[in-house]
Image (cartoon, rainbow over the protein chains, first blue to last red):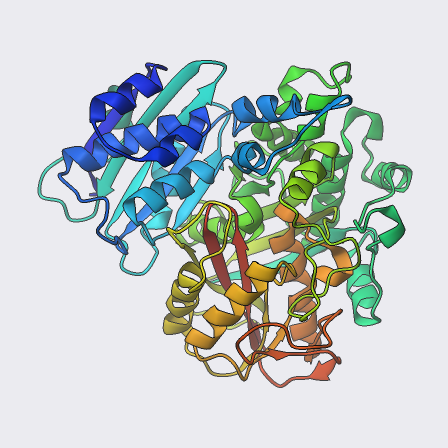
Length: 183
Length: 372
């Protein structure tokens, strides 16, 4: 049975405050859209609780996130930059109009070379989180999967990020019941 | 390992896999330089063809029409029961109906912007009782959706999977790629020294896969292996060392061996950095002698459909024992001596590799096989 060895639940949308409380220096944070900031911070908390060095390359780790609104929060911001008479599209904003960029940001920060995947679901589903995360264990040498629900839309932050490990001695069993309990 | 049972491509080159394959084989391209060097599906032709499914085109957006049409014909060809609880739909799209953001008065209702809603409309069309999976992993989505199909069926959760990929072009998408200065004003030239960037293209495509029993040696076309790896380097630029793609290639080839590879179907977007990165990865993996092609100059970069469209066309080539030529390549334009094919050539190989890379630093490699 795979085990949840650490998790972080983030519902507070004061993301900059949380970032400052971490006392890290990662200027890229301020370029991110809100979805990425939320996913980044929750992942940061998980790695921190495991006592991991973000700089050490991780070939044994995969990353699978899921949400409902994709990158719609940022898409709506981008849409206002392509209106007739007010046309100034920027690559810095456009790049965040993809849901999976949050997996890229977390992979860069933590040097994760395993799979990164992003799925969309109409609502939070522990069952789908389990199915998709367990699929990522198929990757060669993958021993753990950072997975979870990373939803951010219109100031509503709804994030649960979990580290799920194979052959862990301690932790919560990676079951629907346990996931629903910590969500 | 999962087995291909049916497929369909909807693009400006045709409304079936066969039409698309024949067009590509004869060197046709759907990229219209006079129309901004993009490849677009004629909307009125699409809605006329869509009526053959028995549904009403006015109820669906162009993207949904293309996806449902492709799935309808792929399912028909496969003969499977798409309404069975043992069949799962897996939808691949990067942006779904994002164009609706720019059309505040659109008639489709507010939920239509959500990717899961588009997916549900597709599976509902077939009265499928399962909640569809939706993969949105940038430009590698179409390959990820096939890997998802493989994982679900190898775990015996389902017996059949209908993988449907699609994206349509809108101001939203085109303006963004323009802002990145990654669009070529002329037909793209993958791996060529004079390449100026990519062309965007529209497509919907579907593949029906069936679960495979280990002792079954039935002839046919199979997805044998797949791997996804991240560069952990940059959110919009490919890694200079091609790290993620190299790792994915190694993972797949370690499982399956390097023998009898007929060709490598590259991503080959014709941006400076993508093509160079792919060449570096192929070199690091010791694959310089294997024929390489890119299909982007025929149909453009079809985003969430690319992995599905290009897998189907390459499978048809494998099945016929040929390697499709890479259109637009004249002068070698990457540092590594990859073997870009410019003339249709016969092959005796029975396997090929499909590569894709995307924003977010993700890379996917698939390995397909023909069993006779």
